[in-house]
Amino acid sequence: MQYCHLFMENSEIWKSVLAQMQLHISKANFATWFQNTEIISKEDEKMIISVPNAFSKEWLKNKYYKLILKTIHDTDNSVKELEFVIKPQSLKNFNAVKEVKVLEEIEKIDAGQLKFDEFKINKETNLNPRYTFENFVVGSFNELAYAAGLAVSENVGNTYNPLFIYGGVGLGKTHLIQAIGNKVSDNPKKKKVRYISSEKFVSSIVSGIRNHNIDIFKASLSSIDLLIIDDIQFLAGKDKTQEEFFHTFNSLYEKNKQIILSSDKPPNAIPELEERLRSRFEGGMIVDVSLPDYETRLAILKTKLQEKNISLPDDVLEYVASNVKKNIRELEGALNSLLICYKTNNAVPDLETTKKLLKNFVFSPFNVANYKKIIEIVAKFYNLEEKNLFNPTRRKEIVRPRQIAMFLLREELKYSFPAIARKFGGKDHTTVIYAHKKIFQESQENNKLTEELNVIKQRVYSG
Image (cartoon, rainbow, N blue to C red; front, side, top):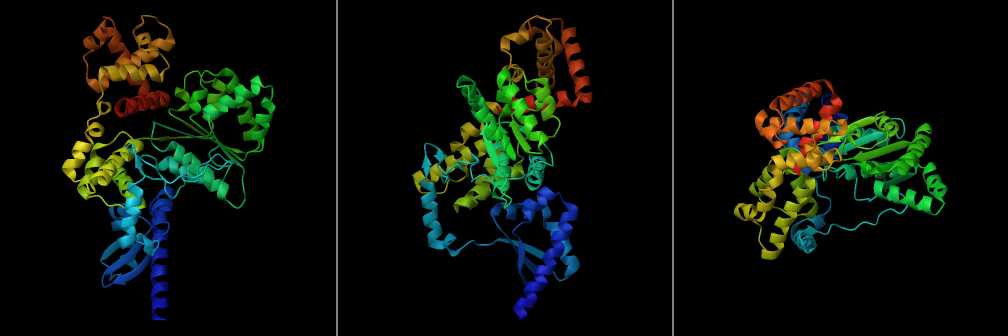
C-alpha cells in the first residue's frame, strides 16, 4: 500500500512537470523528449527519472535539467538533484547477452557499412516500416520540419497542405516523410497512403503513355488519402510528367487529400518547373532541414550505439561529433568505420586510433569553400554548365547566376573586386561591385533569393 501511495505521488508530480513543460517548449520538442518518461523513485534528495534511450537521457540532462528540477522542487522542496536512467526493455539487454548482441551487430559490418536489420517494404504503401517518428532524431536543424510533419500526421489533409520539405543530401528528409506516412497508415482510421519516388512517378507516366494505359496509373492515385513524392526536383524539365502531376495534384487537393513533397531545394529555386506547379507547392507549408549542430550530432551517435548495445569512449564520440559535420549519413559512415575497427581488432578504438581512421572524414575537401567549388555549385544549382557563367551574354538566365557567383566569391572567400573581375575574363571591376551590391541589397528584401543563397552555401560547405 505504501508503494502504491508513493507511485501515485510520483505520478502526480510528473504530470505536473509535463504540464509545465508544455507551456515552455514547442509541441515537437515535448513529443520527442518527454514521451515514455516517468519518475520511478526518490532517493533522499534525488529524484530518479526513467527515459527510453540514451538520446533522450542526453538531451534532457543538457537542455531541460534546470527547468525540470525547478518544477519538481516547487512541488517537493526536498528534491535537490535529478538522475536520468534508461529504463531497461528486458533482461536480455544486459550482461552476457549484451556481449552476444554486440558481436551479432558487429558481424553485420560489410565493406564499411552496417547491414541494418532488413524490413520488407510495405507493398501497399511502398513505405519502409523502419522509418518512424520514434527513431527520428530531432534537433534545432529540423525541429520545424518535424513539428509540421507531426501536425500533418494527426490531421491529414487539413493542416499544411501541401507540406514541402527541402534540404541537402543525407539530412533525413526521406526518413521524416516516410515516418509521417507510417504513422498515418498505422492509424485505426486506415487512411490510404502511397509513397513514390519522383523517378518512379516519371517512369510510370512514360510507361503509361507508351502503353496507352496512363488512366490506370492515374486511377490508382485518385483514391489515395496521403500521397508522398520524394525528390520532386527531378520533375524539372519533364513537361508531360509535370502536366500529369498537375492534374493529379489538383484532383487530390480538391478532395482535401494530403500531399507531401521533398526536394533538395525550395520550389522557387527548382529550374524548369512550371509556374502553375510552383504556385501549388508554395500554397502550403515550406520547411527546410539544415545541418545538425554539435549537440545533435553527439546525441545521434549515442543513440545509434544505444540501439546496438555498444559503447565507445566519450572522448571518441566527442571527437567524431566535433569533426564530422557534412550530414547525418556521413556521421553514420564514420561510426561504421569505428565499428569495423572494433570487430577487426577485437578492441575498442581509442582517440588516437579514431583520428587515424577518420582522417578522410575529418579533413574532407568539402569542408572548405574554394573558388572551384563555388563555381561548380552555382552552375549546378541553376542547371547550367560552368562555362556558361563566363559567357559574356546578357541573357537573364546567365547574368543572375553569374552575379550570385561573384557575390559569393566576395562574401565567402573575401576576394578583391579586381580579382573576381579577372576570374570572369577581365571584366571591369565596377561590374563586380555592381553585382555584389545588387545581390546584397536584394537578399535583404527578397526571401526567395535569401533561400537560394542559403542552400547554395550549404552545398558549398557540405559537398
